[in-house]
Length: 163
Image (cartoon, rainbow, N blue to C red; front, side, top):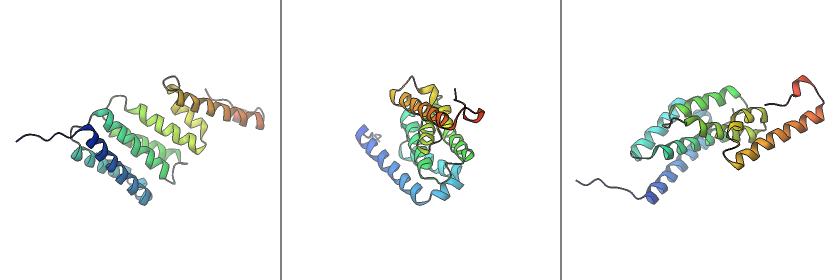
């Protein structure tokens, strides 16, 4: 029997539908996802590998990155940095490539930037600033915002410039 091979366009469409399904689930059940991160990521991986057994590693990891961003974007716990670290650890555990941390660090850094946590965002984004102009702009924005805060509040040891 001949193995059926799907075209890239069909795979992309089905992958997009799966991502949309998980995004909807995350939005409806954010607290359950937050409480059971390893179980949820296991379910994501199971669905991904059973639906797309020959998915390239980079596409697999990008899917995990998008799910991770959706979790962080929807969760009420993103102000808790320990929760963010748990999300990072779970996401990295299920990625395939050796440079798995890169995508997750960028996703987390951008989410922290969106939340206004510029000091922690810099920790995640700074080393990627030279690789991508948008990330470089985000890093510059963090430094600019932190310097404005320092200027407004005066010179104290609490308001030091990071880096």
